[in-house]
Length: 230
Image (cartoon, rainbow, N blue to C red):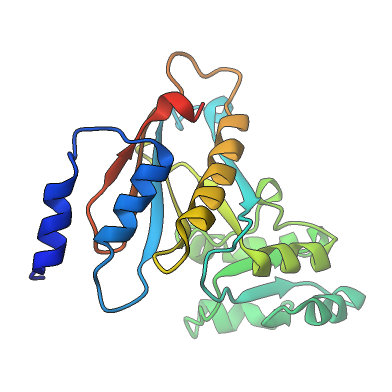
């Protein structure tokens, strides 16, 4: 993809080897978002842990104060009154066992987050092979396995995001849109970092926040000074 003059000028305006304070980094990221669509601003957080060890897993969820800027489609697996409750809370899709073949055989994935009541996990577990690789498997740590489906759905719709390590010990999560104000992005990012720092495993040794980078969808990465985040 050919980059325009504005993008080239922005690249020249900052040093990719320098780690900037949060406010300045976000200002730079907004300037690099020159695509013709509202780019997503993402945080890439490299942690000093080893995700191969169960006691060094970092995973959780946090509600961003200004949301993510995108509409999130929620599927709820439940039964009885909980189905009605999920619908009333604003879930896009609700159901039970009848959804299994639709997902397994018809390759239906018109949803972004899956919530399940604990009594439905036996059913949802049968979808582990297809939901797991897509990061869609409900998990108690993320608050997506719960009897309180109202809170789960409302939090997700309000901007709740899940963070988890990939195999390289990096967390990749959206913190908003390029159209957000700098203040909104700073608040969202600070809320996320607060949650990640709080989730530091007791067994983690040495430097926990190895590197933090912010980038718009089509933009270059801007390093953030980790010394002021921990």
